[in-house]
Image (cartoon, rainbow, N blue to C red; front, side):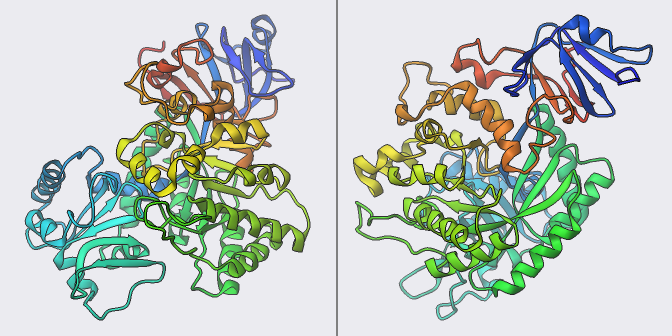
Length: 544
């Protein structure tokens, strides 16, 4: 390099995540790219009169973190503009939160909320009449934290025209009374059928919310996301946010494919979206499939019938459709991003990817299965042999009494040992990513990292209950899932994911060394500095 570096950072404890140069003391940046790493003296020699300097004070430096399964645009708007129900642990708290929001927003046409627990509350408890009692006659729609269950009031059902003889939505249903009238609870795509009737967000509302949460993600060390379900309008908004200078994250995206829509029509739509949005910072590259639902609503698909009822849910695509659709998108070089909760859905997805490979040959597809709550151990080696990536949300792998009771009743003691088997995947050599699925749960990566390592509740301490301790992983493997592996899954490991010469200077400086502290302190980590392409997008006020 003939010109001095724009920026040098010295006196850092740099863990590069690059096996060719794992550690360094200092880093030099020019025009947003890393140009050198080394010891302090070597990097100091690259400084000129106009070079910016940062003394990292011996702090840990890592690549910027990347969340490869997050509903960023939708959750930004839902949480910024609606009632937040995540903290409600009983019916009184839930109703009080909704009532207070309704009273504070008298001009809203609909009362909306997000985040109630489908493990704590049941369809028998959350009736439409109960929601009527706090919404003052206005239509109301509440989404559960898992986004697979919902709750609507009488006015909403009336506007939607849901009657005893009305049909159920494709891949969804309304919980009904004996006479066929809706009880109040919504399952799967019935939520989105109701959501389409409720007033949507304006583009300005999306942009306002994304601007806020882009900075919030930066404050927790996140520099890149993979939005797990976008529409054409979402992509337009992402591009607009970037053009305005408000989007301080890299965005890759995947768009949902539906079983009831023609394959050719959906393939053409994604081809057009990929051609339209192929930038370095805003890009669509993937096709999203939901093969099942969630355990809490009884819509997860298992290989064997449930232990409690002897029943099972049905796949949202037939296996013939899975094979045909997977092969078609794979042929056109789309990554597949597949929602799989039960081991039956996992098996169907792996079979479909194997079929696509047989039809089209091998390419650098990086197909990934997300969630993987229950996996048959016989399928884990197939991930390795087929180069399938495993996308986990480790926060869910800590004890959750209500949800665990549901899962264990469904699965029995033997299958319950294979709930979120992250450790088994890592030991088999499968490429694993750690992500949040925000707004289902927190986007805070350090809470998620701690859960991956301990599989214990954050406030329980070393002696607290452990959820399937055989599937714990190391902090090194967990961080790889947020950096190099995450960049690989988002098809951007050529320019991000490790601190390597030639890659973007997306990096973070932390207030503690994650490799040296107790794993029970990981969740308390604070981010002192976040850079995106060498530019500060977050600096802690105390980091001089």
